[in-house]
Figure (cartoon, rainbow, N blue to C red):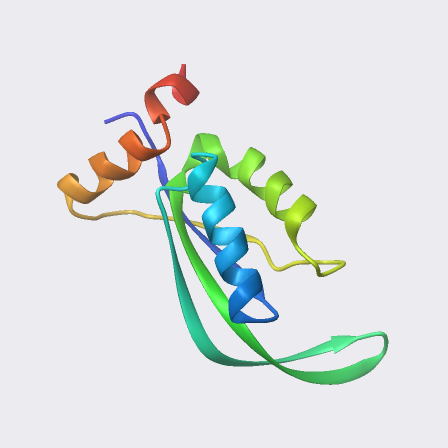
Length: 112
């Protein structure tokens, strides 16, 4: 199989934002699935100060060919000035599931 699968991580400020972003990515066929993981606390430096915020993590399943347009779309829709968008390779998985991911994002068309 020539498609390279990716798991994209993106933190969101709340459940409604995460759901809105997830729905847009799936609707636009940039992602096959986005799972929302609530209950995170992020600790980070912003504007020279240490911040502590509650966030929701999006686990976005897609393919390598979609990472760039998916990243651009997240930047357009996300309320943060600098959203966390990290793409990790999926090195193994159920072939049935990975085939489904390809079908959902039209990977055949994107890989050509």
